[in-house]
Structure formats: structure tokens, C-alpha cells
Amino acid sequence: MREKTENREQLTDEDLMFEFQNGNNYAFDILVKRYKDQLVNFAYRFLGSRIDAEDVVQETFLRVYKKKSAYKKIAKFSTWIYTITGNLAKTELRRRKRRKIFSLSNMTQDDKDFDIPDTERGPESTTDDAIKEKIIENAIKSLPKKFKEMIILRDIQELSYEEISNIANIPLGTVKSRINRGRLKLQEILEEYKDELEI
Amino acid sequence: MGNCDNFKKYFSDYLDGNLPQKLKINIENHLGDCTECRELIRGLKITRNLLNSLPEVKASSDFESRLRERIIGTECSESSPVFSFLSTKMAVVSGTVIVLLCVAIGSFKFGVFTKNDVQPNMAPAISNEIPDNNLNVVPIKKTNRSGAQPPNRLLTEKLSQIDTTDTGNGANDKDVNQRIKYIKGK
Image (cartoon, rainbow over all chains, first blue to last red; front, side, top):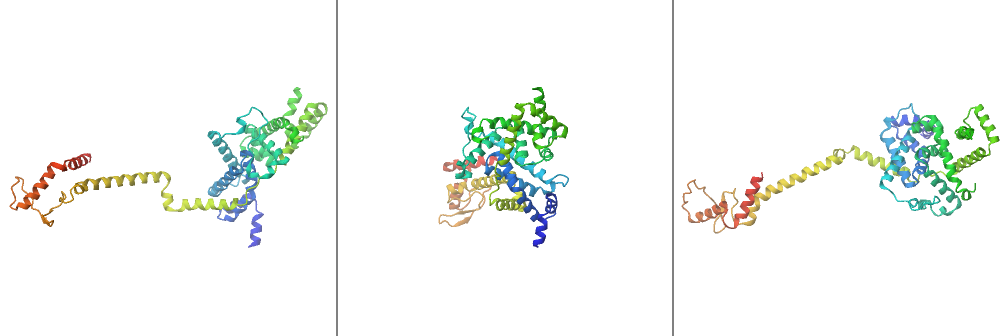
């Protein structure tokens, strides 16, 4: 039994999905274990809130569970699941915009502003690393949406250009161009914080 | 400067090692001559390293158990015939129908019993029994159309009271009018 479990854990994502489609719910559990952290990280970089990120990823897995028959093996599983998460994260962003959530950055003209500290992080948020992290997060947040998604997928999630092209459903050339422009823009923003970032 | 703009669009690929050999050599030659572009490449490297250094935000420890609960909750609501029948729209429609039925039944009952509530001692219009003076129920005889007097004096008095009620005299006027309105409303 243990050997069978270990063998299953060595299966590819696509094979696990196939098993799940054929009624093996344990295969689904393995997929959840494999992807939950990276998807939460991805959604968090988009939304800036861990609670919202976990909600989005829970909803992602719920959809995978309910609509398992919608997955076709010709596509990479990672592409499929990242697409669902990305779309849900974007939907949440649009929903926030409609609710017109108030943020400190609306009050000040100064670019050097900080969002309300994320209390989920705990007391370590006062350390230098946490401050640097916050600066980078804010810089990513301030990017135009089309660049932000590319930067997160490439430089944080470390996906290949081809995979990003499939997830975002845009040509490879456009992916490269947006990553390039996104990095240049980000560099421009971070230049203002070079003292704090020690660069 | 024109050259700089041409090379800039390849800087990300250059950093990622995705350029064909010939283009890579061209860029390196340019970087050798252009301080501005060298600074730009240096800045891009630092930016990319900063992004790579961000700690991974992980799912909380109860993530999987919460997910399991959500899945079970979804399966229960989808498999139960009651819940699957009572979708939101159906629930609203069903509720409305039930309310209307209750109102209709209540109105019907109200219309029948109103007269009795006001005059508890009077026989109901549809009943064929009346109480005598000792409150014993006595069956009544129907009068003929010409209104011929029945032989029994007590019975006569009771009948006249019923007649009074039916023609709407005295205190029963309001109740009868209400009944008429209800009947007309039908």
C-alpha cells in the first residue's frame, strides 16, 4: 500500500489528473500538496493579502475538483491551474476596484508611501528584510496589470516563457516584450528606494 | 542612442540567456562602449535578484482541511434532492406560492367565520340548526318563498332574527357588507 502511494507521488501532474478523472481522489490530494504553496504565493503577489490569496486558491482547487472532466491531457496541468488562479485573482482585483477600497496611497502625493502593515506577518514586519520586501511588493503592485502578471510569473514563479505564453494566452514575442518593459519599469521605481534596498 | 533603443528590447533575454549567439555578441560589444546601457543592465540584474529573493508565501497549515470541508459542503448541497430542488430561484417561487395559499385560505376562513365571531349565539348561515331559548339546538324548517308564518312562536322569533341578519339590519350590517365585498372580490 505504501509502495503504491509512493509510486503515485512520482507520477506526473497529467497522469495524476488522469487518475483523478477515473475516480482516484488521492491523486487529487497529491496535486493539492504539490501546488498549494506556489499558487498561494502567486495569488498573494497579485492581491497583496494572504487571506484573499488562500480564498482564490481554495476556489481554484474546488473548480479543479468539480470540473475535472474539463481538463484535457494535451495541455500541461500547471498551465491549466495557473490560468484558473490568475483569472480568479484578476476577478478579485476587479471586484475590489468596484468596491473602491480605500488605501493610504490615495491620500498622499508622495510616491514613497506604504500600505497598512500586513498584520498577518507578525512582529517580524519591523525588520529590515520585511521593509525591503514591502518596498518590492508595493513596486510590483504599482506596475500596469499586463506587466505585473508577466513579472510575477517569470521572476517570482520562475515559469518559462512558453508556459507564460500559454497561461496568459498571448504570443511568445509579446511575453518577452512585456517582461522586458516590466523589468525596466520596476527598476525605475526601485531606483528611488536604492538606499533602503542597499543597491 | 538609436542603437541603445534597439538593444534595450533584448536586455531581458540577454539576462535570461535566451539570445542567439550572434545577437549576444553584438549586445556585449555595445555594452563595452555604452555606460548608460551597462548601468541599465546592472540595474536589471539587481531588480531580478530582488524579485527572486522575495520569500515564498506558503499556504496555512489548515489549508487542506478547509478545502476538504468546502468540497464536502459542495457535494452535500449538490447531491441532496431537497437542496438541488430548492435552488435560490425555486425557493423564492415556492415561498411566494406558499404565502399566497396561506393568504387565500386565511381569507376564505375569515370570510366564513366572521359572522360567528361577532354573534356567537347566532346560527351560522349555512347551518340548519338553531339554539332555542334554553340553548338547545333545534332543527329549523325552511320557510317557503311566500314567507308563510311557521306555526311555532319561538321558531318564528329565531327565524326573524336570522332574517334580520340576512337582510343586513342592525348591528350585523358591517359584517354582511364585508361578506358581500369578499364575495364580489371573488
